[in-house]
Amino acid sequence: METRGANCVRIIVFLLMFSSSSGFYLITDYYMDPDLGSSFGGVCNKRVEDACAFLNSHLDPFSLADYSNNIDCTMVFDAGKMAGAKFKFDWLYFNLEPGDCSKDYLAIYDADMSAIAPSNLVGKFCGLHGVSFNGTPTDRYMTFVFHTDGSGKRSGFRLKATRYEPSPCQSEEFFCNDTIANNICIDERLVCDGTQHCSDNSDELNCSFMDELLGSFFALGLGGMVMCGIACIGGCVGLWTVVGALTCCKKCCVKCCCCWPCCKKCKGGAGNSKVEPGTEMDDHDPDFSPPPTYRETTKLEEDIEWDDVEDDVQHEKAAGIGSQGAKNNLADVE
Image (cartoon, rainbow, N blue to C red; front, side, top):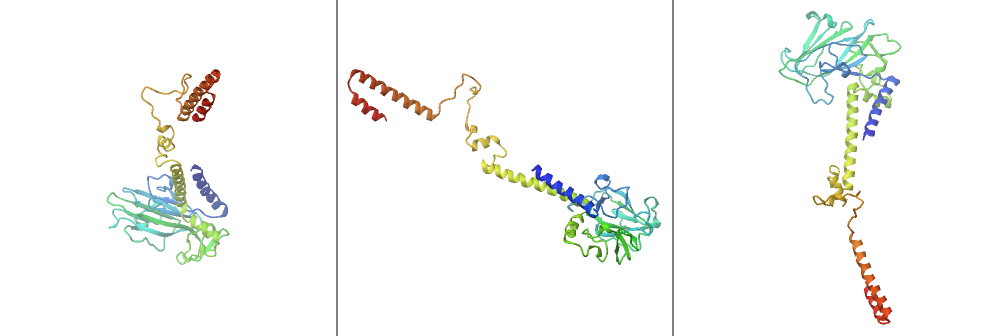
């Protein structure tokens, strides 16, 4: 079982190494959860400078849990010093507690974290309404502030942020005929990665089968890939546990896998023997001799009867009489 789990880990590691060597860009998942450290994707009070990233309200790989109460988290997207470099945002889903956005909300500022003010507030969003804003960001920075109180929870949000620069594109960039951001250049490693970055999907056209296969896996993001690896390991361990249990129980009995004495009983071994209190047997005792078996007892009785008959024959031969009768007796005994 451990071997199968290790093989699953090796596959994940191989794919990660392949992504870096083949030019794929592994998109990272970030979470606006103060309880998560940076090693687990926590991004509160931090900057993101990736070519592409997923931003999530909380860690929920299987979409089963809501975000927590009493959250206050601030982070900023930084597109870098390149002239005209900005981030383009695509919202995958958005669901916060409805109302007047005074309880749970996501506030977005068109400014750096240290310069946020009511004057550069893009909007404060909540409820089921999708977040939309045109003409922003106007600079390299975009700051997000996620706040929740203790009154209610929802499934949160998830967005994709893609860094771009204005055309003309450099040698390691891909020209994206984007109808929203108007002729932008994205990182060439984002092409054929299984994730749409251009509004016309031109970055995912003319891709080979291998690119599409690996791209669909890398499109899960780092967090999704890790969870797939954990699920793979758990599935391998569970499968081989069931196979081992069924094999064991088939050889013995239903309770054999959990109860070793039951296994002995099923096999007709020492589990059926009973020892009277105070009469413990010690195989290491030099004076100890095990009781004879049924076969040994029967053989001993036959030998005794045979010896008695032979003694009678010898006596009769010595007396010179009854030799023929003794032979008949021997025949009868046989």
